[in-house]
Amino acid sequence: MQFKPNLVSKTAVYIDEPLGNYGFGPSHPFSNDRLPAFCKAFYAKKLDCQVRLRKAVMATIEQVARFHSMAYIEKIKAQSAIGEGFLDYGDTPAFKGVFEASLYVVGSALDALEQIIRGHFQQAFLPIGGLHHAYPHRASGFCVFNDCSIVIKSLRQEYGVKKVAYIDIDVHHGDGVFYAFEDDPDLIFADIHQAGIFPGSGEPFERGTGAAAGHKINITMPAGATDAMFFEVWQQVESLLEAEKPEFILMQAGADCLKGDPLASLCYTENMHGHVTARLKHYANKYAQGRLMAFGGGGYNLQNISKAWIAVVENLLN
Image (cartoon, rainbow, N blue to C red; front, side):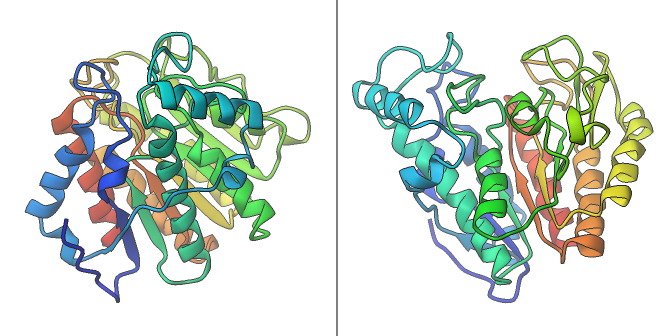
């Protein structure tokens, strides 16, 4: 891959080859074809000339341990060496090198975070990232290490940024993030997802606990929901952002909510992704010094991945 950095762009994209190693083979929904599908559309639109292309970075165990237990990290390392069995109850198979591939996902997210905090650019897109189902002690739903939660922990522990907004439009509820910060009033959480599918959480009454009550919203959508139905509820997210005024914004931009995804049945188009990205960029500029990180998240229809993620990048650039 040829890297042609645009040194004046405020937007970075991480599409280096080691990130493509995070995938579970050709017969698995989270295949290794996802990153190449995005890259093909990305280069066809010549977006590589408009962004800063960044190389993958490997996280340290200490960085992963900001969210995950050492026992769990060692379990992943051991199964990665063997390359057999499952890392959860049956959705997330081990393969040789899964530990290293997962470290690259986390490390690239942390590199993007550092570069944004230092002011080298303002926005970043990580197509292989947004692994929002992983818990501190276990894998879940194709997610080994929860890069989103590690970024949130790092914002607090390393950079002193307290008030963070996490906005998730993946078709599946971001349970690994929500429950980790359920009682944290400074983690502003908004998740719009399909009702009645994996992981079976994120009901509208779940709005945070203790001091965090009311600082989080979960919105469920019926099968077949369209862009128009999404936009009807989206205003709730904007109202939350206006009230909370976050210092940093994270977006999980799963493409599995587009029509035709094999694991879900919402009927959005990529226009929704473009709109959400543009609006989050607006609030990032208004309250967060322009600081916005977007993760690719899920998506198992390769054409949908290309359309949705291209819409994210184009609206980060606009």
